Length: 495
Length: 115
Image (cartoon, rainbow over all chains, first blue to last red):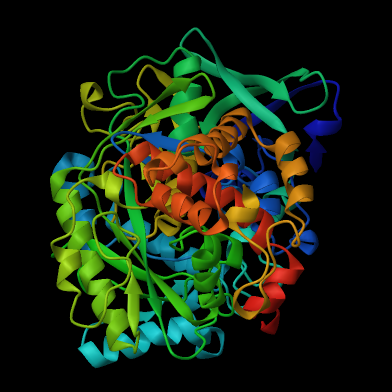
């Protein structure tokens, strides 16, 4: 059953479990809990979108489905946009549905942190097997590559480095390049079209337009969630929980909710980690059509371990491509006219930086500063990315980096490696967010224990990437889903 | 100002900002966007008008300059040594792009429709 908080005057119900958040973590946890036959309520702050109504206009999508209309920013030396979905299905509605298992070397790091039993690789792999089957995960098929994805294949072949079609939950992808604005064909298996309806079919109640403001804690137990509906006048709601409250609102929103709920830990909102990314644009002789093809259909992890970078293709609508093109006036328009012949390879790094998340006057106050090591990794990644673009036939590369020429010719890639050390010289985005309510073997070292429960409140669990002890170096949705499932099944067993 | 950023005419039939219907987008933006974004947009317009001419050694406002100088001034914002000015330039271009690149007239010219 679905309830639209935008049309409610009040809501006050009792369930066995209340899940805050409907993205990869919340939907997965809710589906598992609903499968046990218990009553489940899923609270989602954003609206429910009709997949048939997805358009291809970025601003329209930002207005309806992105947190802060995509204006959320991390502050540090540089301002970095932090991209998050705020809609039923969370970021899975607006991401590229990429399915990467946590690499074995990262799982081994988690074991060395004492979390081998809490996050057992064998169990996670079992969940990944199941999720991949559920959501039809498969490498992007050649018919969905389009020009810009094929270029990465060509460049990698020529350089003799590894790159592969990205494994995604999008079999039958129609290559519309619209992952960012919501998949119009329904090929993308977002939570909106998969786990949420499945949870609903098992009796879960979904309340959209319901902003969770506080987890109610009584005598050391979570007893429910209260918040505000999006209906005019912002009426209050309560969803009471007989058994447990599951917080799965993202590595930004979860720590804020816990903090407002009276949870105190030196680690809450700290250790904020991410995969900062920066793009590089290549200009080709023929159209690369970066708006026709799977949005992120090819990637290279050739330097994931040694340089901690991953390079991936990205297709974007013209309005987003234009914003980063150099110049103004006629010079800007000249570049726009060339946009169809450009391809963008984005570099993301498994950064060492740790920031923080606090409540601010306009939402989350996110602080984040890249370290010198991160900058070195990024520069190497950019050079590698430029080598791929040139090997694929780019006649020029437009770095968009202050202090470097507006355009690089083949042979000038080394300039990227020797580029500026100052993050303010680059254009960034932050996605893939982790660690703000981290799990730790010792109570004093984290916010949640091995059972995912907040220390001191045994039936208040955190199921999202806030609990991750490190970042991953690969796209995290698959990891988040497996961890959320582990969390939910442990919770159900305990109950 | 926006006529200087995206003037009419030019390469391959791309329209100017106003020919593409930016005014309508701006009205919606002013009513829909959250406060920090609206504030940023206003600040970006202010900087483009009153700061950008100084970057090329001219007196503001931008509207007093000849069209080629206006373009030079706006280009200079994106290359400024001051990070905040570069960010403001990016914001100016980002918001303008939303109201421009999303329109049918522009998309048709750049080949988006071919998809």
